[in-house]
Length: 172
Image (cartoon, rainbow, N blue to C red; front, top):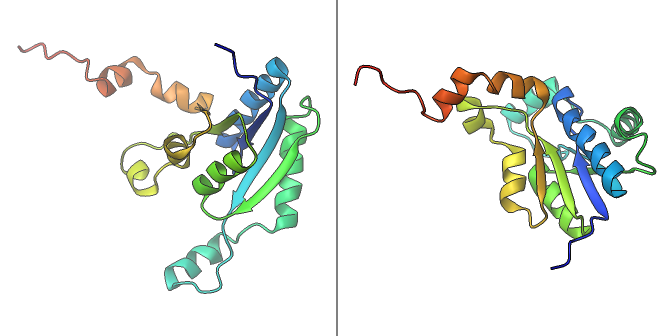
């Protein structure tokens, strides 16, 4: 069986500190495999009609302009991907998981690298997970990355025991 040669990878960012963990992995993959790196930001779609709830949300978090997004992508690429040659910067608008999956398929990517934000419990149920949906729907392999700060929170032995239901009831 022939080993697949990776040529193109896409790494995503939402410009949060947590998303930057994926960029470090993308730089490492580039160093190992000399792949073309695509840096993707998916912003909210501008809506002409909005509900009152959407208007309140938009007033507190205005969508980033294309020029601002390009500037941010350039800053992020310079900070984390400076050793990766020419990084292609891409901006999409819409649902992040759909846009990531579509781009990966359209551009024939070999790998998607995405950071998880580590939401659990009710916030995970209510907000969902972009990374989870990308993994579920992508035909392209996906590398999900947990930022070190989240790994440290999760990796407490008591938490592992509890999450895996390994605690023994001593009263039995």
